[in-house]
Figure 1 (cartoon, rainbow over the protein chains, first blue to last red):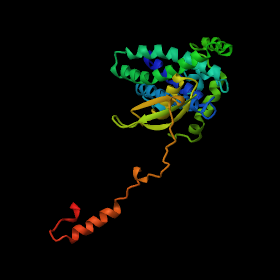
Figure 2 (figure 1 turned 90 degrees about the vertical axis):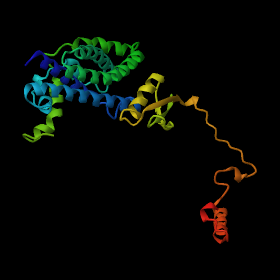
Figure 3 (figure 1 turned 135 degrees about the vertical axis):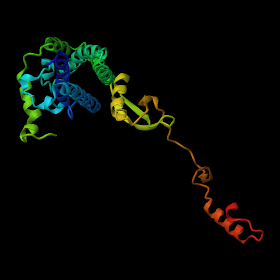
Length: 190
Length: 99
């Protein structure tokens, strides 16, 4: 596997798992408007995951679905940060959202500079959606930054951002849930 | 705070009231309006206005029942009918449409 494919998988896994975790707020976010906004962000993340999985799948001769759902939990390349189940802690959820969007911005900016026009184009397209995620993360950050609970969550979560080689038990639990339907029928595609 | 959201479906069209969002400030209101009324390509533009900025007028005095001021107060149907009848009977051949 080339470094580039590895990179695509890192991003795709991050976006898939974070999208899944963020969607756990659907129906129970602190206010109705936030419910809609945060669910929409979660959907976007999963859409981005799909796009990166498709690029990786072409290189590896497989499909996006197989990459997303048919690997073992230990094969995922996502960051520890996105694995944690944070419901019902909104402060921690926003802390993660802010840490993630800040890191993701740099990663996407680098991909926009790619010599491969397909990669640069996809990164630019995704970045136009991510701009709203960043605005959302930023406005919540400004609102919560003086809250001790929020500051504590930031400190606690920040070191997890770059850990990709060992996963939390929470990823395995999420994997069970995420792949249950797919595993229920051998060879089925959805 | 409640913000009223107006949306424009196509460029050049009038803005119509879309609904409202509850948000702690203007920035949140914009983000929420964007997600609720703009993310499916259903709007070309939005107006987000604090509810207090909207001045509602709902008292319209009409003490003397001047129903001829109203759009529905001046029925033409009967008059048109009579005019058409006259035109049809007219010996100099005026067409009904010109009545």
